Image (tube, rainbow over all chains, first blue to last red; front, side):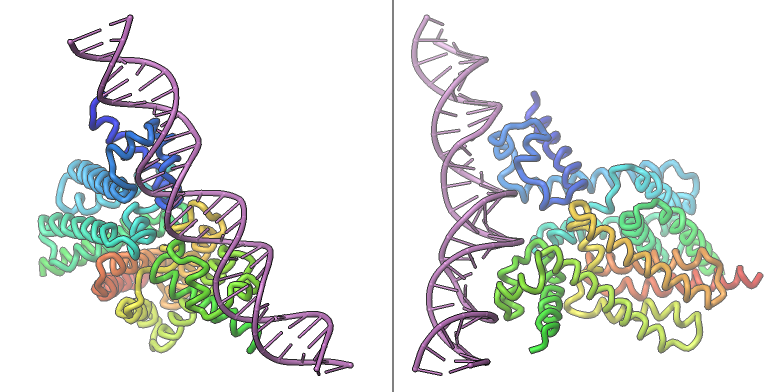
Length: 189
Length: 189
DNA sequence: CCAGAGAGAGAACGATCGTTCTCTACTTCG
DNA sequence: CGAAGTAGAGAACGATCGTTCTCTCTCTGG
């Protein structure tokens, strides 16, 4: 068995459990059982629970970035790429496992007590802002559009999570269409 | 000392502590000390920590509803009332104690493990949606506008909390202006 | 003045959690 | 075959948390 195979299985299992029940509600023993790993090997791979949490955040960041970009790349023109963000959200919201943005949840749970988690959440959201900004720039939009679309995406995530319905994705998408049209129209003027 | 005076002091103290450090990070002993109440009296007023959490959520809902409505009422016309939502957010984001929406945070922390908290968060957000819908209806806007503005408000809250800056309030306000203008323009057509 | 009820302070208790230690069994190499 | 190192399973440990209990002091009513 590969040395990093057990490591990634631990992180994947922790990701699922933390997402489903919250980080603080999942003990090391539950994680150990679910991952099928001995407690000794668990602490051999990770020095503490906090390091597992950080590894889970890294995994989530990578998963989000890759999944989003895969959907965006399928869109033809720059305007469609901006809207594809909300198509990606729509697909995510419909999954049974969806329980809101993992970074917002981690920040809410541990941000006040763990500077590492707060900082990672901040950087994740910052990277999303930059990603949207690059797409908006490709579309020839003025710089104020990207933060507006990012706020729509964030709001859709929390609304869908708490309401328990995926409606927010299409609502945010329609709002994005209006904002994009207005920004591009004004830029053309 | 009034019987409900100690009760409201406990809830107010718990609100501040839970907001600053997260619910699970604040023990009953810390709350007892901060509120200046004996442990016996604490459990005399509330049967459990969970009931204190629910009382804090009620307090937050009332505070949010009253504060928002006070700002909205000062606005002259229906369109200004819709935009006043984001002025209220701007004032909130600038407070040192701001750490994101307390309902989103509670939901992230306990929603998966406490159906009561999840349900209360859902109802709070639902009531906000209805509040915005009433304002939008007064402005003569089509029904799709209110969810769009609500999503903007939610997104501004999480963005401001995680980024640590109040910029999202004005960005969301400008987006709201565009969405309102588009919705009212289309309704007039 | 005294008996008794009530309140405050904190010790105590059971449960849980993160982390470490111990014991056993298996594998592997000479 | 035998010895040694390793891995697994779970007991153990210290800390913390929610909750309850106990002890002491005070205040009140007669």
